Length: 252
Image 1 (tube, rainbow, N blue to C red):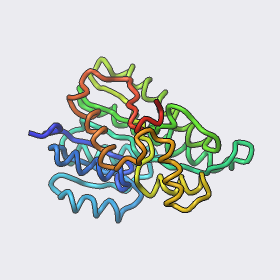
Image 2: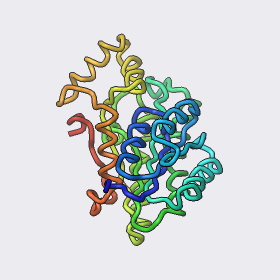
Image 3: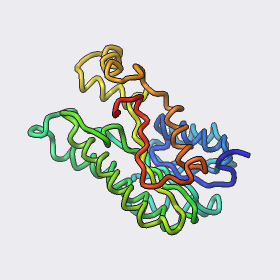
């Protein structure tokens, strides 16, 4: 039996590299999975790969409460319940000093990364079976910060406060709530950040970032997915309110 046998999981940002890797791993471990994203084509490819008997998708704007609620409702109705929710959707914004940072971009980052995570918590915890697991994808910059990333770092720190509050509120139901803090991942999202941060081409920007990482490389999406699986399953049964650092030593 898989580590998530007979479990039902809901994942936002499901068309992105981490979300897709997590959905596939969850399915391999026995879960039924509902993935949500704005990228319908990406969601369709993913669910086709996993199989209609184990996966479904819902095009969802995570900043819209009704859409998040309805997507979670589909998971419950389609597969019979909800045991795991992974609030994974996120955007970066810009790499700009605070005094020049566009207010509309700041608001957009907060809306997706903080409000979106809050709405997943609000609607998932309302229907999640006792003993479930809620996981927030924060970031290594939810543990520290750097110049030029005020919206992203602020949002990812805010997710930790959300996580700790939720963990306190649902512990009596045996539901565990934790946050994941990945370092640089080998995907398009991260590489675009690195190019903006350094002004270099993608290859050189990646090298500059890897010089800061003690393990001297980017993570693969599959490595991050395995950390999500750890938080979703019984291997982390005595963990709640925790920040799991998966940064290659960057936040040590």
